Length: 530
Image (cartoon, rainbow, N blue to C red):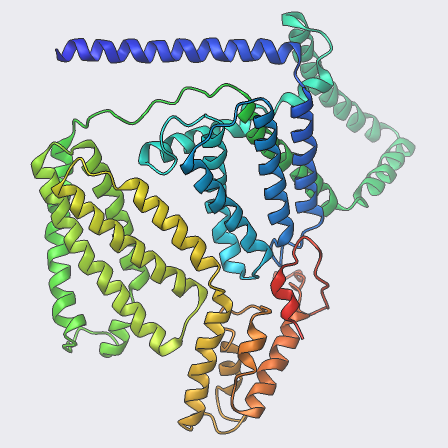
């Protein structure tokens, strides 16, 4: 029976490969006959407009704003409208759910100005938007929130970035059809490379033979050197980004490529058992230390810097350990869900990792109590909560192997992440820092601007070390008049600062200059600037 099943699986894989090959061949033929259609032309223009707006209308030091929101919404709407016109749009509740998340997350760029979250949101936005389009266009065979669907979407996304990128090039150079035309293109490219090499070699030899000719070449080189290098770099990046955006969107009009599901049962269960057993032993000792010294507050001579320093350090490392442990437990429960020993060991490791996760939270809690909130610390707290949720689900899956948890966990993680973005993190951080400063003033810690460390403390009110429009309302709540004036003056100074240029030594000079926000970078929080 086993051999027969394996034979059936191999026949299915062969059929899928044959089907994929025939589909690719038919697509190649169709593209050969008519490489650029009306729909493809629309996507091509929109993609290059979005790329050009990003690189030429965007201040990289400040971060993307409402321009990214508009570009994302327009490109997403264009694909869905064109696919619907072809009657290829698929009605899916999960697809529309992902679409809503995608639009909301991109809207964050047009609402708030938190620099850290802008960078962290980019990969999340790529994941959500790709899953949205693959689901609504019928490319994904599995739920976009499931483990199979996430893996399938990731594979399709990488393939889509380069699947149609050559279409604009082909429409410019392809004048003759068939193999003969392709052969001529190859010969032309090879000839161009050889001709360029021969011309450079000839110019070098002739310039050494004649001074007048060498002078003309040097003059031409100086003229070329006056071309703005930054402009050329942005132009090249615009072309590359435009091609990638176009290829990803245009691939929605092609037949979906074959992607093999992850359903192969694991055979190396002994390796997983040994690894899980080793982690159980190590985590048991670590958990004992946490319960005795961290949670119980027992002092030890081995604590470098005392209990306070011991308790307020190591949280990032513990979060990383818990995250890596999840990357081991979840595959083990999927591949070896019928192996009872693997499930038991996974449950033990998960329960011990819960103690590690709680230890990370307790350390972060103490750290925030001393130094206040920052964006990264808030994100870390969110990550600790998500890890605890996944660990709880892993323990449940160890007891009930057939339990489906991935879709619910993915939906919760994405929804809470978007909720975190709309919580106005800059305002939360500033309010926390101002409340702590007011309490310190009441306690008499800061009695005069001449106190040692006063200037650094005022600067630390913007604990993320950058300017944000959402700081103004919070800084006006500083009770001490002089401190309030100093804090607002600090914001006025930072709003005009721009990334200073580099000196020859590599150190940055202090040459702040006023920067006017451009449309692409603008967001609604800028309306709060007095």
